[in-house]
Image (cartoon, rainbow, N blue to C red; front, side, top):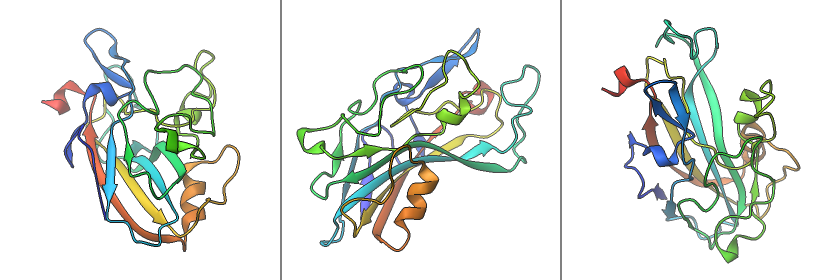
Length: 215
């Protein structure tokens, strides 16, 4: 089983149009187009009953003390944790392509609605989005707080000393409908899939907002 995108090569940089934020010379970062990249997969087992798609960043600082602080840098030695950017479940086995911009096109303050996924093709009925971790990130921001369903792209700390990796993984399941309900998270989806994964494949893109790291 394999997965790929025409937007970026495996272990290559993700273009800014698919990010939540892009570099800004004055403010360090400004909002971007926030489009979901196209994804395509093949080679799933014949008895696949649905797919799950997860995008996560495993390089998020475990402590926020230095994050986006003038005159400081997030050290490479800091332990890192997962940050979920996209959780999409109940993808029917006949749907193996997601078009660019079909599930996200622009930054939506307070988050896109869910869990029903309205993007994609006419065959996309029944797909459900989980909430991503911008839900927690913006929880204390009066202008941005809300439930962030679906895809929201990269926006790593602009002073992070490492490049971040965005892992898009598709899972082939023996379940037609994943047993998660309501406002479910990436961690809950991972737990619900245990014992039901027939195959999986990943493609990884990279991103940084730190000009010195980009160079």
